[in-house]
Length: 362
Image (tube, rainbow, N blue to C red; front, side):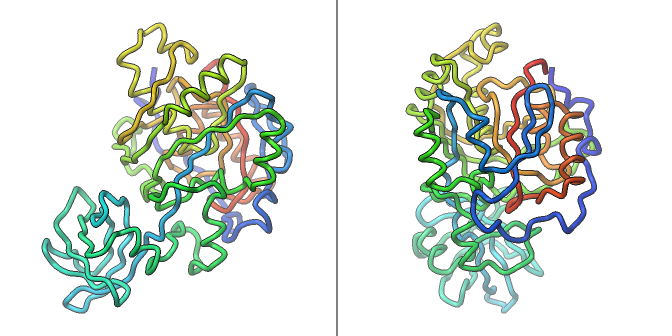
């Protein structure tokens, strides 16, 4: 049963002192704190360097290998009005969907001059996004002229440090406009240490969109229309999951985006498995999947693939907070966040982390 039919956004609200919003990364990637929530809901205050002690040989860590693109561009319309463009998704070599901020929305077939160097044609609208046609490959334009799209709650202008630290060390598939932030805590020595421990790794790709920062704007969760994101789960990753299951290991998603990719792949496949198998998260072999997902995970959702996850602390009333509550329970989530605030953990993209284990009684 999905409980979102009676839950409201108020159930996922909390007061956060502004001073706890991390404005810059920790001195090193692994220098953050780590709050451990076990399957029974008990809390332990740790440091991220303690993560290996929480993992076991044959566990599988699944990372999102999306790469953040320099998606923000500034320019002007032919009328001289200023515009700010945030690319949401690159759809082909020369086409992209984008958010545009200006005093008046540009009309179809109008032209924009971006970064005083690039001409772009507005072809029209796709819902609340604009379809832009570039005269050069979009990714090349962004790499040369764009700025790193830091989240709206980070107030400084992006720097060279942000170009490096707002990107995971394993990022390789360009397309995200927000970082899969749980992965920002991992450095290469830790990844190598985990491999030496017998912890396996695999990758999914989910290109994180700007919608990840948006609060749910309807009162009832059941009325929310989830933003779409593109994902892929490869055959190599589904084989790694099957192998971990055979060896008794856990599937541990690094970040809510990895969770969403894995569970979306399972959701896409559920039509071809029996109801009995669908009720048992080990009951069917996951098949490779790719496409758009609008999967909205809220309390009452039964996880099919993921046993635990590494995640940061999320915005009030956000879909990511709801996903966490679906894994550990609403009351446990609320207690964990109250504890983190009292203990002055650092919140959001550059903040501290949690390691949470799925409550199997939910």
